[in-house]
Image (cartoon, rainbow, N blue to C red; front, top):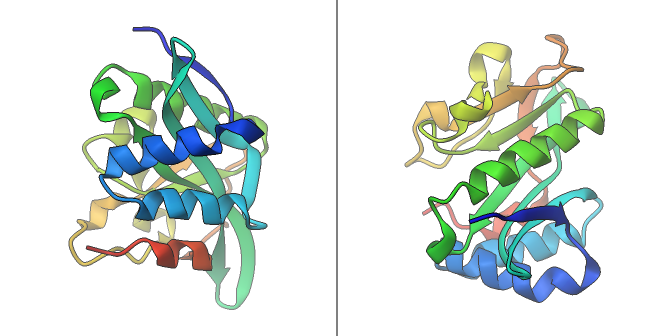
Length: 176
């Protein structure tokens, strides 16, 4: 199965919502995507879809979150969410989306990408625990500490440290 990866286009919103809702079995993450898209944190060129036979079957986005370093705040890239239609999972589509969006984030000049995600899945793309790098992410109570991850890109600088502060859009997703 070959998927085509491309940037999200204005007419894709309904299909993206359907993919994200199906992947998470809940509309909360689709609401998150819509809220991020409507915010100043949205990076249009880092919101990608995967198509199979002209149908959108996957979506990933990188948007900005804040990194607070003792009162000094800067925008950093955050990957969330990654979604693939259940019937298309385990076919490499999610991997292709992650590789493509992180490569584009690198070209975009981001020093790194943070995420809360499976410590069994994301390390294959180069993600590593964030805490040893001085990047702290407050995780839900059920998530293991290794779920707080970072992917260092070409412009990474060890001096970029702090605590990730999510924008209000993330309040739409429960921690359960």
